[in-house]
Image 1: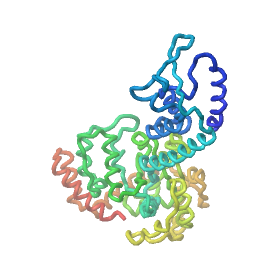
Image 2: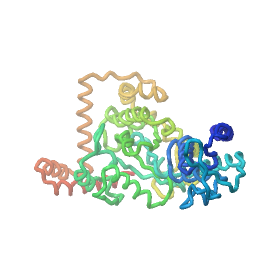
Image 3: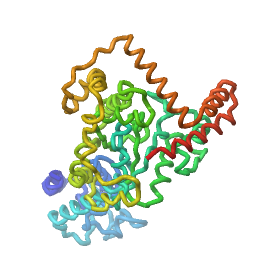
Length: 439
């Protein structure tokens, strides 16, 4: 606010330079000039022109030495005396003879600063409401646990997996075809349980924003967000000012957990989801302002949840609430258990650790995770091919046990023959089965 301290000097200088030259005193400047000063005030103070603040600045900077009757309405320019006087440039100027005493600039400056600070707090709150925060990271990295903690905060509503916001977007530019996107949503297992309305009149950015708004409006909490594991770098194309919380977990625990979900047949392929998420995060950080990203380790969250949640809430612009630890009352998740950290030391064999050291050892060290002490395996083309066959066979057996061989064969036939309605029916049945197993 240094510029506010200079206003009295500019005021005195203007009076000296204009005295005796037939020009207007600064106190009788027209409302147009004062609005210009107010607009400049707003731009310097908050970096943009915002109508409520502009109106406030205009009112505060308006000199009470100007007669209201003379400077507004039908009487503008007549003057209190009703007689105009002319300057040497044959231009009419008017000086108000009422209330000549100029107010204290110190008090005026203090009033402006107080009002701008007040409006700044309102704008900050408005930004928190309008721009969401997204929990990003690999699947099986603890994002559901963190989401439950945030959603139990009195001011935060965080939606579960919302990959359908960006999954159909092109990698670089453009948006998907809307009719095709609407049809895809009708069979998407993540979208359907939320019971969101599809407004066919909206554009793609407006539609996905409406999905998040519909979900978060159910709780009426001011701060909102969602979880996204895939393609979360595309979120910036919808919300350029969004904030991101990256939850990082040891990739060896993530790869091991993927086996239990049936997503991979060995740890070599189970590591792929963790590697993809970390590559996305590296790209996202380069395109996002530093104040809009926050990195949190799963291991730290489990070891000291209150402290880590307090720091996260400070980043989000709110304070920690003890209610964040009450999530176990409304979910199947229990309180953080330190035994969940570094499970790979107990549950992975030396052979599996050797594969993971080869696949992700360097990335783990970049993230600050310790070596397992196992020599990295050598994976040539032949062994890579065998690992791929093992992965496909395991995934097929897992799907056969979960959905049944009849379902798998029917899905293949419907896809090949183009039986759209029957294929959609099978997809819906498969989504219902999957949702029963998702914790």
